[in-house]
Image 1 (cartoon, rainbow, N blue to C red):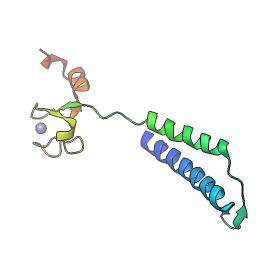
Image 2 (cartoon, protein in one colour; image 1 turned 90 degrees about the vertical axis):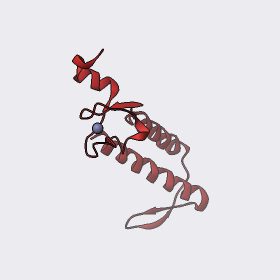
Image 3 (cartoon, rainbow, N blue to C red; image 1 turned 180 degrees about the horizontal axis):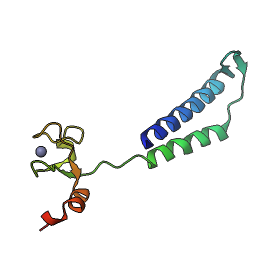
Image 4 (cartoon, rainbow, N blue to C red; image 1 turned 30 degrees about the horizontal axis):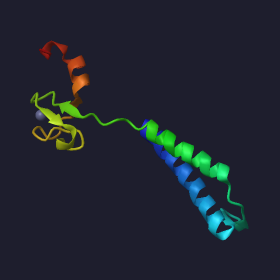
Length: 109
Ligand SMILES: [Zn+2]
């Protein structure tokens, strides 16, 4: 869900930036159905787009550093997993180590 929001924010920011860079270098803007129109580069729109990009970065979910497989109980560094899946059990999603111990608290020693 939040990844869709992030994609939309990125697209809006990229469209604003692209339009403003075209306006900056060529003094025109492409408007759908109207073709090229005279346009001025807007610093505020660049700032607005930058804030959007920054927001998109901030809402990006953090990738866990260490994960644990609920099936083989093996602990991995996130980079050793296959996009978060256990390299031993193939199709089993590993859990963030904190999440894992919240879920299986009886295993904590
Ligand atoms: Zn496993």
